[in-house]
Length: 218
Image 1 (cartoon, rainbow, N blue to C red):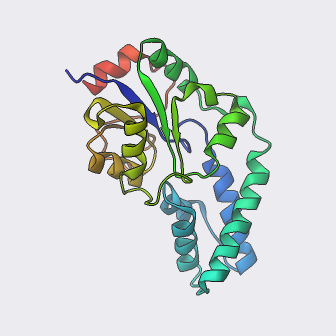
Image 2 (cartoon, rainbow, N blue to C red; image 1 turned 90 degrees about the vertical axis):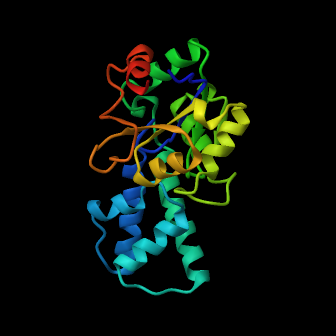
């Protein structure tokens, strides 16, 4: 049986569905550039950095731009995204996850956040749950995007735990790959076809307790 000392959660698609706001902002940007961006295209953008996402968007639209113009558009997309998330409310926390995190904390498990988002603290404050996380490692603290494991390794270091004694919760294929590369146990949250490399996959956190989780992961 593995001794689990910490759980590290991705943000988008795991704690809250900010993916829909990213999608709206990217779709708006694509429309500005004169092409359509669809929901299935958005799957390719999950769990990766803003600039990498922009490059994929431009590839889809067959648009070539200078580095300076790309940086301008990345800022514009983020401004639109911030407009959306500034209106978020605590009832947007995904079902079951807050209760699950609180139960883990009560049992002495350390809790961290590992998210590519550069707005993670803002979102957690909007949701009223920033206090649940002992460390928050987001896009402002790392150089390498997932599937590079840097974000999770830094979170484990800040929690003072070994990756092998930590579990990463992710909804994106790139995030699961990052967890595997970093030597973490990992749980996919969402579609088992997309998350086939994960140790286990949960459809969501509804009805998930600490005991149920430990029986699955061990």
